[in-house]
Length: 456
Image 1: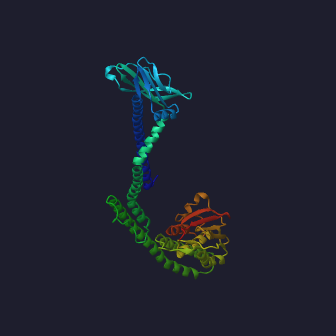
Image 2 (image 1 turned 120 degrees about the vertical axis):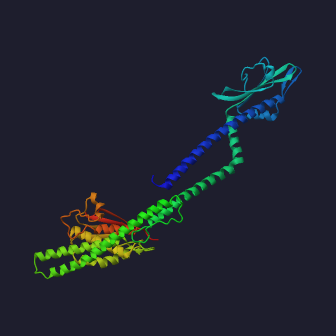
Image 3 (image 1 turned 180 degrees about the horizontal axis):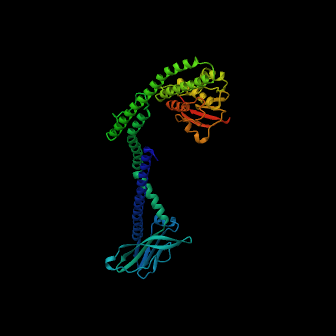
């Protein structure tokens, strides 16, 4: 993962995930603690209710539970139990169990009327379940003690958890939602702030073009941590730009300076008597003139920049250029076929650059297959242009290499080619934001594809 933004997002997701996991863990502990507290309180309240509603009259124990408490016990579906017994363990009153929940022991003086908590395993609907229970010895008359035991089953825990969640959501739900929203907004804000400076650097770097006058990145709005790095980068760019200008000037000067001697040589060669040597010499001079022309085109293509808001309609432009540029190739025997579309296709491109691209592609087809080769040109609604020929084609391993400078697959048969045409095509395509590729054509020759950016 090479994107810094993606890394930051991943780090935030991991951090938030860990935070949420810890929060859920702490929340579950809080629920357990709260549940235990409510369990204890529920058992204590049950013991207290029974204690308040028992009496000793005429040497007999009376249990007169209110209707509401009895209704709650009946609605509990076996989840609630109480057993009241005397000091001998004889059961005096009960609900849900005919036996003591655990063996009773006469309390010592210091444990009189103290509540004891315990758990027990009970069978409910053929299944062993854990019940939480409590017991208390209560003095109801002089030297007369009774034992109260109560228990509640696991269904009651689910009810408690629901009550706890409801209680927490009612009390803190809006706060939690607000915190989550604030966390999301904060994450988005932090990510934007962290990557804003990097996006400025990226935008400045993408705007750099040799010869465009923009060979540096503005440092005014950058944080001070990035200023030294960007300043060093700008310094290196300036040196590269100077070297580039010197190289381009040398190419221009060399090509222009050589044109005059070549013109003189051509004039002298044309005065020679007709013969094989004269034809060979004129062919060599033509080859050198073509190389000089390609060197000039290559030098100019290196500094080519697509103007702002530059766009054209692909079908109309290609048709006009082929009618002009392609006419000379047709007269030389080249078969040229162009297929257009009914609907307009607007792309970001420059007419002058597209003309040079087409000329070099046609020269490349002629150079590879001779003047009798056929070329088929088409485009699609997405801005993709296809130039296919029926020449000998190119092996797949060379599909990327053919766009390199001075690349000739068969140096012993140059056919007037300087190996610069496709290099010029790629450079001019990149200057317009287009992508250029090579494939095998349906006719068996070479297919050059240009993918232009659509214009709004």
